[in-house]
Length: 624
Image 1: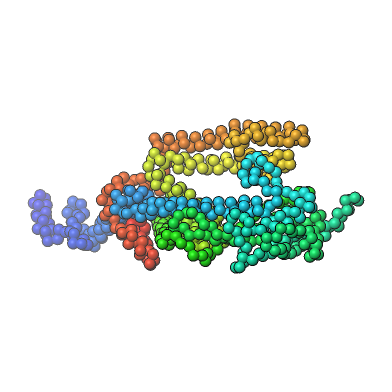
Image 2 (image 1 turned 180 degrees about the vertical axis):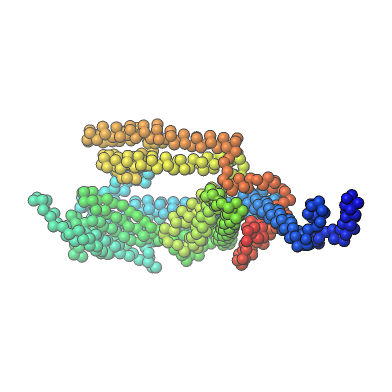
């Protein structure tokens, strides 16, 4: 038995070297497996090949799973670095990829230029408004009968009552005074002239608005009335330097009668030209103006008091005079134009850069959404999606549009191609745009923790403050309507809805409380006592309750932010994913990722639209 077993083993050992292994795919040897029987017989060739094939398949599957896991891990790391780079500030981006902070530099240049432009325009606008206001005062002295200099000073409460007429003779005397003032225009100190080419006097236009029928029989309480309003006009003609003029006789000759019971309003219209030799410097030429003057007689209330007012609309004209001043007179105009064009160009660049950043952020958002869905099988949260919306860029785009529009209007104004109201429109656009530009500086201060508290506190408190303000606004509206209705006829601060709201808001801030109590008329003691209860209740409720709760909401948000600085800020699922990338901005991993030059990429983006856009530095999306 032993001899036979030994010979069998020797026989097998001599044959096995000829076929000890079978080759797998790739040329790797595969050992044949024995049956394990005591007889030592080998498996059949088919069984051996089947076992080798199964083992090869298992190894191939394990290798594929390992390779897929490694690929997913690499994709995750690449996505983390991409998102980490996206949320870096300009300094960190420079450390990571040497990306020059174009938007930051553009914003710094813009804030300097826009502020300089605003300062320049504000000086010119102040001079224009002040000049037109001073001329309006001069016209009031020249053309309004019984004008009181006390009316030239705005005081509160007003030192004088409204300027009004109460007698028919006063009405005609006021027209006569204006006509004689216009006829003797050359006697005025100001350089005023008639609006004709040869400086000949033009007729004044007298217009009336009357009810079609308006006859009152007061002795028996009857009337004839038709509410249709009819407008009629007549020219008042008189010679230059006239010393006497009777509008009543003139209108009578023209068969024009005035029924004061049916008269709604009347107006006296005429125009004056003038030249302003302003002393703004050796490079400032004179300005020519046309003033369209309207004296208005308002009898719409029919309460025996006809309100009288004067308005003067200024329009700048082209000057044809020969002015002798510094030979460098064009310097000022060129500098202003250069300033306007430079501001428009800088704001346009800022607009393009911020719009491009918003578009890229949305592209990266959708790529991240696809990545989360493909890799983790879940949707990115709404809070995570909101991380890609940069409201600072939206605000910058808004102020760029405002400043570009304002600068274009400013250039038209300085070229003397403008209407009467464009000064105000331009100042509104430039002022609001400059306000938003300075707000944008907070974004860059927010990169430093010690300067970011205000922004984070407002952001944290905003939802609660909005809900609380809505409830407070409802109570405030109730007090406003109540005070306007009940106290309006007896209190000057409650005569309109807007003044009522302004009065109550001032009371919340502790302004002029005693005057609000004391001004109330005592004609009705019931309403006098009601006003006390009303004011005490409003002041106690809003100062001691509403305002205190409002401040407590802000303080609670501030304390929460302080805790976050110590314990860490809450993170969305996106920020949790990004926070796993612990590499510092100066790591070479950011530089080894493919990226293009920011300026070169911007030029490509402006001239063509690529099929796979670059998103913050990587040449191709992670997920196809």
